[in-house]
Image (cartoon, rainbow over all chains, first blue to last red; front, side, top):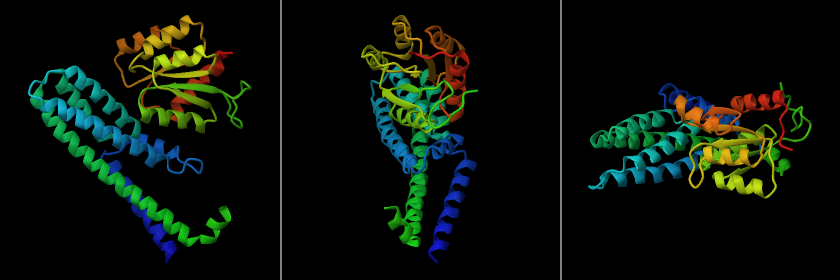
Length: 160
Length: 138
C-alpha cells in the first residue's frame, strides 16, 4: 500500500512537470536545477526557488510602487528591476515569467505607461500561477519523501 | 579535453574559482554548478569584493564575472584585475546578447563570454579552454 502511494506521488509529480513544460511555464533550465540536487544537496531546487520567490516579490512590489506613483517617470529604474527579474527567472527556468518581463521591458523602453501597467498585471498573474504550481510540486515531493521513509523505516534507521 | 578525476582536472591541482555576481540566485546556482564539477569556489557580491579578495593574496584558476553589478561592474572589475597582472581565465557572464555590449565586455580583458543562464555544459566548455591554453593563475 505504502509503495503504491510513493509510486503514485512520483507519477503525479512527473505529470505535473510535463504539463508545466508543455505549457511553457518551465523550460530546460529547471532540469539543470534538478541535476544539481543530489544526496549532498537534497533540497537544492526548493532552496533556490524559495530565494527566487522572495526576490521576485520584492521586485513586483517595487515595480507596482513605481507605476502607481502619479509622478512616475523613472523608466530607467524600472528597466533595472526588469533586467533583474528576467535574469533570475531565466536562471530557474521560469520561461513564461521571463517572456512577460521581455514584453514589459519593451513597453518601458518606449515610456509606455499604459503598456507597462498591462504588462505588470500579466506578470503578477504568471508569477502567481508559477508559484502555486511549484508549491504543489514541492508538497508532493515532501509527501513522497515521508511516504518513502514510512515504507523503509529500517533503512532510515540504518542510515542514521 | 580536460578530464575530471576525483575532483581534479588533468592540470594536476584541484581547481579553484571565484563567482562574482550580485544576484543571490545566480550565486547559489553557479556555486553549486562548480561544486558538483569538483571545483572549489567562493563568491564575491560585486567587482570591488572581487578586487579586494585578490588584493588579500588569493588567486583562482577561473573567475565567472557578471556584467551588471552595483558598486563596481564586471567591465571595470575585469580591467582592474588585468591591470593588477591577474592572468586567470575570466569568463564574462550576462543576460545581454547585443553584440556591441558583449564586445565592450570582451575588450575589458575577458577570455570567454557565456550568456546566462549558466549550465554544466557551458562551464565545461570554459574549462576546456583553460586546458587548451594551459593558463593557470599561479
